[in-house]
Image 1 (cartoon, helix red, strand yellow):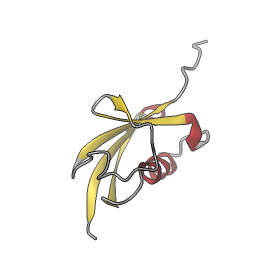
Image 2: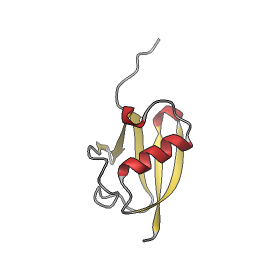
Image 3: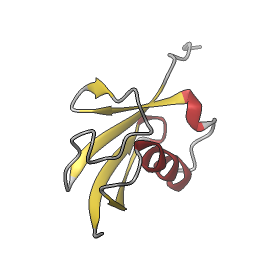
Length: 85
């Protein structure tokens, strides 16, 4: 199976990474790798993934099952808002 490039924007880090993942890779893997590469604090469970503006609730689904195509952009956001001080 060939890998496809997927762009992942991690909002906490204000950084974007490009991952080479197989289309059968779970969404969870893309999120975990992006958080690791951007050195984000917090557990992966504290973040959600959005694609085309909609949250991907079932992170065990593969990228292909979620409709993610080559060079698609995913966004990783904190699940809960943080208070501003």
